[in-house]
Image (cartoon, rainbow, N blue to C red; front, side):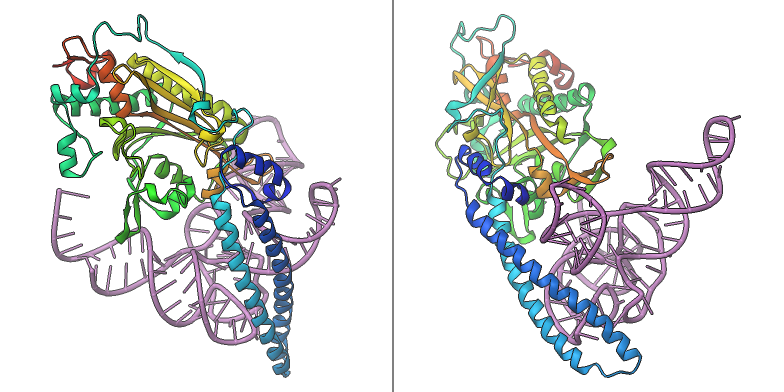
Length: 425
RNA sequence: GGAGAGAUGGGUGAGUGGCUGAAACCAACGGUUUGCUAAACCGUCGUAGGGGUUAAACUCUACCGCGAGUUCGAAUCUCGCUCUCUCCGCCA
């Protein structure tokens, strides 16, 4: 959520930022409501002030035995008038809130302006030693490999739950679990995060806090009876850990890492890149979340990307970093880097991680603040998060790049102590 | 699922209709004292929204879990909800 004061004072900046995000703006309408709101408050507060002082008089009159009937009936009228203003105010504030919650975060000045994913900018790439984009043999894709080695079962997953709910079997299941543990341990040991194991179902307020609601309602699985939603990412529960809190400045930055299953309806995206793991309704992800002081958030973003990259380098998997252009940024993000890993069989890059700085957008929505030691005043924290990483797309790259000409999978060295086997055949 | 108790500022906790934005204590912060540390003493110390100001000062309003209601006036009375704790039942 943007600051209404900022919008009031910089309407053109806000409009431009929204336009760069390919969103439509209702800023003029918003500012009109804002003006109305302040008028009503001024009137209502004046009446309330009057009521307060007169009511006190009534008390004193009664105590001294004087008759206050006339004042009381007048105050009753004032009370009705106040109720009237308060009613109007509530309506207007709801309207303002609705508009405000649909306004996206503004892109940071370093973000290239662009319409769509085509205009994202490749920042750098990292390739293992002796890596070649051309294989000496025709690589199998992950679905074939999964079937041949009996480690993935998409058909049975579809039987149990529906398409997009993969079943991992045997060494495939062990490999998945090992990957998750490896990534968690790596961040804990090398990057100084503390671990969170969050709830996978959350309430509405949490989703509003991180910005999935109201806009992404259709993309979420719901459990209506209890008013709960299946999390699309661990970002939601982990960021909301500190909702409605004022943190101590000295605690910052707070860095959490946590595993969760992630659930996405992916409404309307059937048919596109939907083979096997490329688009699923349930996948596993290790997520990093940071709460930081505003002035450090862009440095923290670079470090966050680095933390995710370290995992891929340890696994020796080729990847590249993209800086998203304004039009491809998510609703809540001010700046975002995607990490894409290479798939030899698809012959293309696959998004395996997304690292974003939300600045104070989530902080304001979720009311997460810290007390500035200089000014003694609470300020909104900046929040960041990044996948470190999502296993499904990563698994595609891993299986495909580690396959041998005979169709076996060599397990990456760093995973051996977790899997306790070195080859899948 | 059943029965009961509770929810007040960073913490403990007082407060049952007007003198309470809220006692007291603790913590924190500033200061005095002091070889050092400690102690003692003095002071400051909630959040949000209007108005005001270059910025402050200042001023008004709201907030005692959340939402309605009663009243001239609600932390305090009524109703609904949520959460926490204790006991019973069920259960991984």
